[in-house]
Length: 163
Ligand code: ZN
Image 1 (cartoon, rainbow, N blue to C red):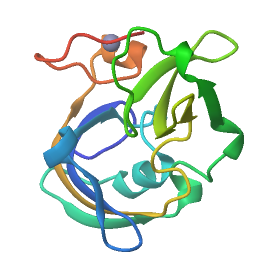
Image 2 (spheres, helix red, strand yellow):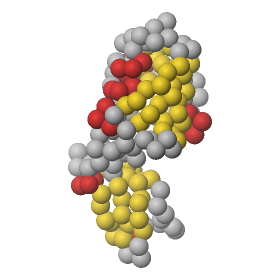
Image 3 (cartoon, protein in one colour):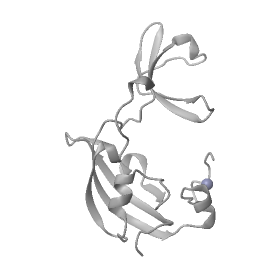
Image 4 (cartoon, rainbow, N blue to C red):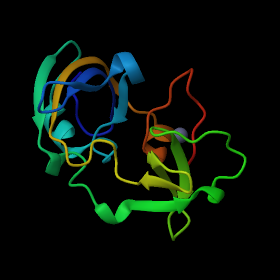
């Protein structure tokens, strides 16, 4: 079965930056599961996967423009430490969910902590990076109507998600 619109696709992957350093992989985060043609995946990967089938292995270079774009320094913010009540220790690398002005959830990463302030970065961790993927397609099937309605893949062990 070929990858076309509304196929549910599962992929093992390794992502490297331009220095060849592994920045993410299915060994760390589990495979990518997405529905093709619904902007559920970065465009550079979707375009490369179109028409491929289970068992295909491929190397794909995705320029930052087709991945997570450039960094936006306006998404970096210094927040007073007292805005994090009830948290014993705040360390770089921790993630917090906050809200955009329209109320939609937004994940920030702590990048620096001083005695008084926490610097948080709302950029995607891969913003500003070109990505070099090794991909292996491990499943292609028709997405269910419910999956298409939700815009993401459901699996037996993963029915918990925010809509
Ligand atoms: Zn769902």
